[in-house]
Image 1 (cartoon, rainbow, N blue to C red):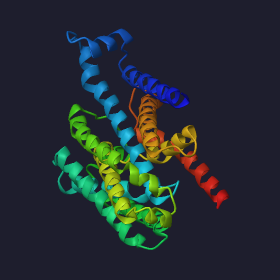
Image 2: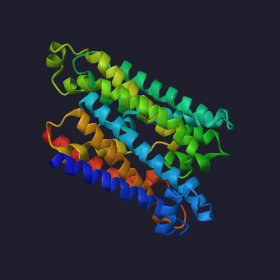
Image 3: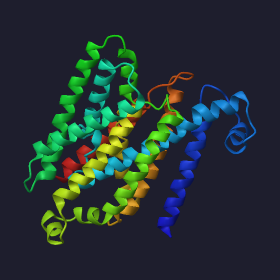
Image 4: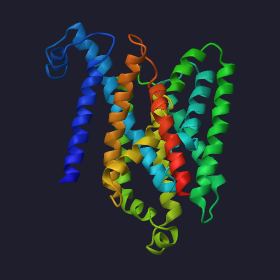
Length: 329
């Protein structure tokens, strides 16, 4: 009963956040106009067109990307057994960013699909580098964290170097690198939706193995779990989730770090991975929607990158988590 109430509250908060995202912006639009734009097929006013072509895809994209980042963060923490792990900290986002920025430098007229492909390649390169540096020993999950942080700083430095070489598009690159859903379109959603659906199906198939990853490695191996294969497959899913999100919205940090901890705190210890993943995705969507609304209010009537808001929220939380883990150690 408590679990049902928790999920009902999360869904209601998601709906309210979604509607708030449609309401807040440069143009003042009434709730009645929003209702007509969403549920009336006859409305063709300027306000209806504005909602359907700008605010609605922006809200939907924020929902999807928030869910993707939360799912990617939770999978990363499960695989590495590190509560401070995330694609952003581990260099997967940095690899995707480096590939996209390099693509902007070499191919300024590249299509969105090409950017997504480059992001996948960069994220995969980062993941492979981390995997190779982590070794195959008993402490692989510890080495994954250390290797990820090193790769993150390496790729971030290379990205800054690429931006220095491209003096003409530096302003647009900086805005993209800060993380933003400002330029959301239905084309973005059409590209992300099938990918997210496939990844969710694969995660469902992976759930039994994810349960055993919470155990000691020796116990998991004794139960017949192929740890290397499960971890590698889970990290591939992380690459798909994080890479596609970075390609479209830029490297939005801290969603993948904060949300898993909030979900665990709400559910308590011993919750099943399926329930935890579902709640994390809901909370990720809510967090990114609200952060996007806040980004519109910071410098109203202009838009600010949502990544700035997430950095303001996430940095203190990261410090708190690091201090808490240090105290436990």
